[in-house]
Image (tube, rainbow, N blue to C red; front, side):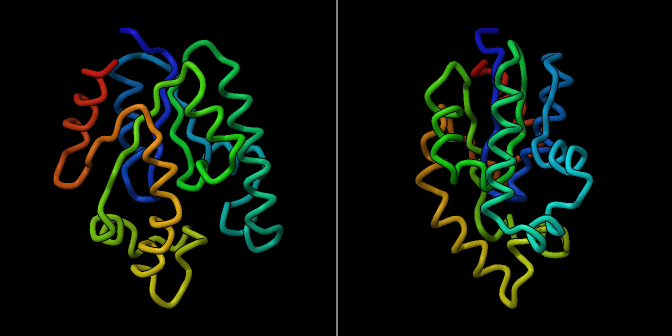
Length: 168
């Protein structure tokens, strides 16, 4: 296996957490799920943190978590969907020895997967499907900088993991 520093990026609901867990088991590299680490470290749900302190403060702390993880020799990172918004994060994810996989997922699929999830602070709006489209438009150019793009629509977790594994 050529790569031992792996990051999964993409929209909320693209399957980053699920895929990264299976990939971690398959290749025996430790998984770091940035949203989960955030909630444990700061003892709060991300949606509650957003309400209290705003997205900008969240993004600063998220960057600190990314920096901490990427000092390790081996890792799989499952990033939050907005991780790519910060230039410093993009520099880490796209300009280092990390192989980054963009799990590209259609708006329709994302909506179907997360329409009942009340933990997504950016989707607590009147028209979540339209909001997904808007968010994706803002982030797509950043996501496209990944080392490899994997289309996830109509694929099982196992198929996506195998596709990543073949690249590694």
